[in-house]
Image 1 (spheres, rainbow, N blue to C red):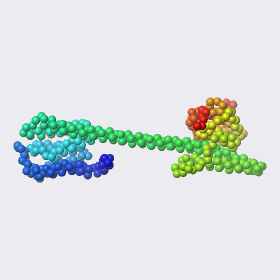
Image 2 (tube, rainbow, N blue to C red):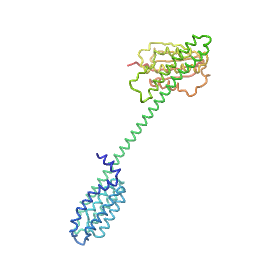
Image 3 (tube, rainbow, N blue to C red):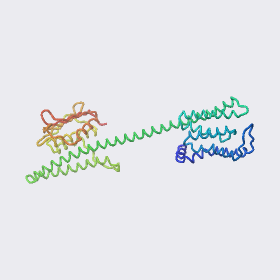
Length: 389
């Protein structure tokens, strides 16, 4: 409720100021009638009801502009000082000094608040001078009242600034959290884009090689050309399925119950090697056991990327060997070819090696790739053996 009141006050500052002044204005109005029959003691001057109302209005009017507390307080103090110089007795409207003092202590710096408090103390001292029997007890009581109001203003201002600081830090933390979430989402999209590149590049490379083979065998061996066309069709469907799975990850409107084909694993490696488009052989040492699906997918993608590189850069007649070793404490994946190796032209902006490193790094492993001393190219990945839960 208080939060809504503060929000409304900020949007209707003039009206809120008038509502704050209204109780004090009503109090001054109530004293207007008794003031008509009031007889000042000593040499005090009488203003009459009209003068009383005019002076009260002059003292209360600056409270409507407390958005600028120091000038408002200064104006009220000057009017009160003129009132003392004229020999007029204090009025209920002089309480405006205390209201403005609280606002200065609340909104302004400590130095301005301290100066305003000292001015109010001086006003008490000047008011007591005109009394017939001033005393230290009276001055002390008034000073305690003024200092209490000043301290309440300081406390309220300090608490208000503290709460504003907390809100600002909370908003900044929320913005930083949202920014980190966006950065994480962008990194994930980049990772998915690299995976999409790897999958599509492999399948399209296979389709190109198969299409070239079908073109050469179309007249000489129609049956072989027919088989190549079937392989192109199968590889194209696989590429579309992979793209649908990966693009589905990026879609926000995908229904959670959508049924997708499971991600490939070790069981599909032999089929991958056979259909890679490059003469390749798979050698497995040891028993894979129950590896997690994520690690199986990582092995599959590493082999897929390595065979794609062999197909693209190995040159004519290149052959590949895929070796998996499950005997040791680490899962070792080695893909070698006898192609051009370091003599192969460099690719243009591929993300295959980066993708392999990220996949292996997820499981605390390492991957190296480079030309072999005796010719050809080698991709070597080592992953700690993990077991499915």
